Image (tube, rainbow, N blue to C red):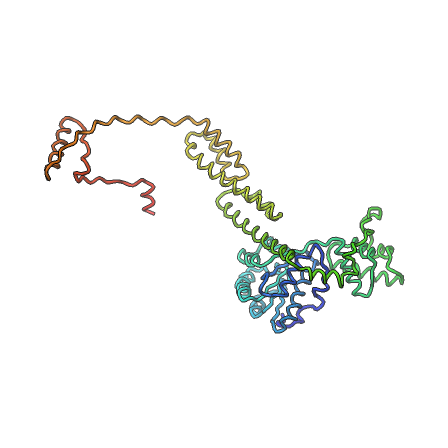
Length: 444
């Protein structure tokens, strides 16, 4: 690993030669904003996507841009497949840390343990971290949840598959770099013969240009057919004949597309980036809450299947899920007093529904049915008639009241009557025991 040297990056990776389109525009915008204000926005920044979609290009473009703005900064570049603990120790001194293929390094648990304090110290001190992965970090099976939370604290943004228009723009750009100007229809035809991988596009272009040089003639459809045989019959291959939209034609790339896009990096693009960041954070919160419900015994299988869908769909599903859980809890409380009057079959059916939010309506029907069939509670026994209150006694001198009370008690015992409780004003102490719940609470 070479530290603090701009030549650790490839100079060919620049923002101005990165072809933008619907598949990568947000990632490009985020990378540009980080390069302009490193350490203070979207930290860490993680870019994910399939092989050959431009992750490394964007990451190194950030490094090249930052090295021009901050020439004294220490830049460290690490490859996940070759990362060691010694590399991470040396990375402590970096101002800009670049992780390529981070997911490969996370297979080693020792690396993950060492990354946690490194992330905390760098982000806490305003030093920028950039990383790339082939998949979203949430799908990395071995990732530590604490490390995942650090990544979610920044910005995770993806590169999508290229469409045919974007591929044709890339082919036109790269052919012009090789000194060959391609007509729009030829660039579009080559793009239609190649998968979305940018590296495969480069290889296909090299092959086509080689065949053209060997034929000593112009680059025609026949040359392309020979170099890149069509995978479909010519009868159904009408898409390459569609002309490129004039506002995104290859001739506008150098001036219009890049310059206009950079100048148009306004609040709308920033809002889209923030919206995706907020969606990722909200999605992670839902996952954490569902884990708690799962630990409490509630079924979460169905809602877990849609967690990676559009965040609006996930939010609506989670709200419905929590409403059903509230309904289940209320029905469980209602079932409690009825359980002693239910048959074993009824109890078994109700218990099978108690923790499944998808079956809240079924549980409600079962509890309502049980409440209608349960026998009414027995009427309370009539209270015993109370003897009439004794006539009020005149005020007695001090010391005589206890004596008369004792005489009255002995007289009642002699007649076989149950002695009455002495009036409270006679000083008799009566123990008031608290309820069982209060006594248990006191013990706790």
